[in-house]
Length: 243
Image (cartoon, rainbow, N blue to C red; front, top):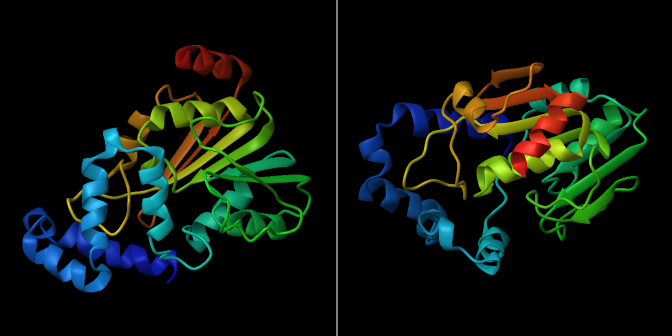
């Protein structure tokens, strides 16, 4: 299934079904017919978010079924990312299989360094020309401004301390930071292990404080696309705010 299809399904589940239906035992019962006990595990996972151990977090993601083929990004988002990449070095934080980096490389062959980061890289396709690093988004093993462009798609909604994660992404970005999150509402029973929910573009801007002078934000078919330019003085201010 591709992102375009799941976004249509999400429109029905999130915007048409009323909240009292989405949070009801009836919806839970129907959802269990599709995903079995896992739908209950996901609800408990979010309820216990502040108390989860690293092992519990990893175990849940290992058994969580992969919904999308290749990438969580839609074709429109992939094309936009490739267009907005600047410089010659790119890191994709939360790279998954490496699909997004491979897509960018085919569109932008002039790029000289491509790096993929994920907390577990077991399922990465190990594509040639892409270096893979196992790390958490909250603690990236790179120097300040190491990559011209930093990409992070469909990750921020998964991490509990998203402000620390955003500070790290900004720290390692030299010229540009690109982030994509789903535009969605929170309900008790969902088909994903998300902690953070952004129903509007301005909801996500609150998470990006302090917002730099040069940025773009757009709703691309139920995905929030955010792009900011890193300026030296702004980066210094961000680093000081995170200390």
